[in-house]
Image (cartoon, rainbow, N blue to C red):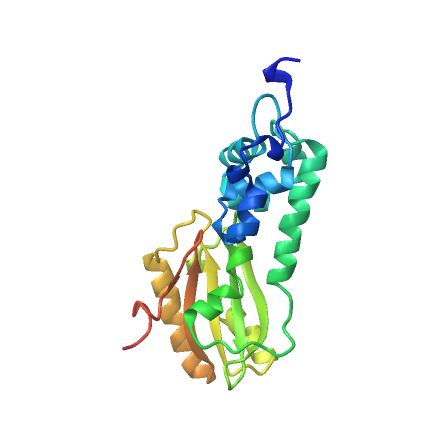
Amino acid sequence: MSDRDQSYRIRDLPTQDRPRERLIALGPQALSHAELLALLVRVGARGRSAVQVGQDLLQRIGGLAGLQRAVPAELCRLPGVGPSKACTLLAAIELGRRIASLPPEDRPSVASPAQAAALVQYEMSALDQEHLRVLLLDTRNRLVRIAEVYHGSLNTSLVRIGEVFREALRHNAAGLIVVHNHPSGDPSPSPEDVALTRSLVEAGKLLDLQVLDHLIIGQGRFVSLRERGLGFAT
């Protein structure tokens, strides 16, 4: 059998380069994306190690965000993956999604933009369309629920202010945080985002519902319009 036809396993790598040994010694946070994927796919193909298969997969699928959005048929078509590995990868992604959305024993208190973003960033950073959601909070800034208001092509000029506040009024929320994502991955606020924020803040005053912040979720980062002083009176 030629080298080209061999399947390369993680154990074929030098000991110091094996992802499993590196994870045990240094922790999972020390591994690259490709090394973590290598632990899931386990076996390489056609002269490529499992780590190289992981690198190729990330490049072809569009990084971790692309992997999170992928469907089984799409993964199965990738070189070196196939149905079994595709199922393993998608199962790991789904477990991560479920862990991120687990309801805590006590409602979390939202004391900062980072805490608010952490509640939705894992899922929203991978969405391929724009979504607008509201985090509803009680008088102690504890989360009541997360409600989706819009999804699809989000034209802020068409957002109905009343729709944004409907769930807050229904659940007797004391305040809310507006969140939407930029599928491009760049969370930089547009002029329309700032104008929408200003309209929501003013409407909230009339309804006695405080708009605490407007977050824009990008790939691996977010922007707080309140922190930037955009749309909120100083």
